[in-house]
Amino acid sequence: MITEREKSIYNSYLYASRSAQNKPTRFRKDFTKLKDEDFVAIKKLSAFFAKHNHINYQDWFIAPYEIYSKDEYFDLKFFNSRKALKCYSLYMKEREMSNPDSSDVIESVKNGFRYIAKYCIRNSLTIEEYTKHFTNNMPTCLLHLQEHRLNFYTLHALKVESTIKAIEKDVLDFIVKDFQTIFASTRTKFYGSTILKSTARDTKEKVKQIVEKQKQ
Image (tube, helix red, strand yellow):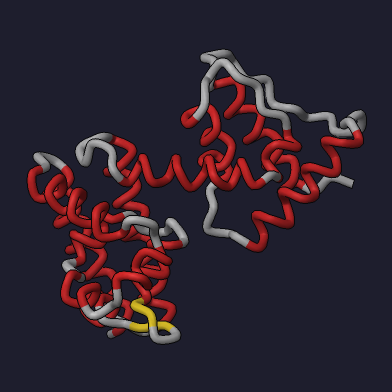
């Protein structure tokens, strides 16, 4: 039996494959005639997303079309493969390095601050405390970066450079390959941006006020 969550995963897959080719999407409503191999693939994907709940379905499914070609077809079985994971990692890395003033990056930074707000409220932290907070001997913000809950631009807005400098290079590269190169590049782009820098500052201030109000 297909759950509502699994139906959503399947339709996210449909949307990604169709929109990559600029075609309209007809979402599936009847799952009674789903092919056996697709049923198995959806169940595996559902278990994978439950284990890695920071992954956005849409990012996972659109990644190979961005990395390889929008003209190719990737079946559901592909998205349970190591190649799918590699595509996702490359796609997310490219997004980290993209234009800081693009709508995708700005929205990603806003979403990152929304996540930080929820985390701080749940753990009774201020934003300043969050920037120095550790989880299992690792800066919490870096763990959230590794999970793609934050991007590098959010780290620059948080001003966590002193926290990051205390971490060994090998550890940073384990979290994100070529960490220092990406960090330096995105820092230059962040401070040279015309929209993102001010948007991130304003968003950070709003989040700070929300978190502080919750602590009162």
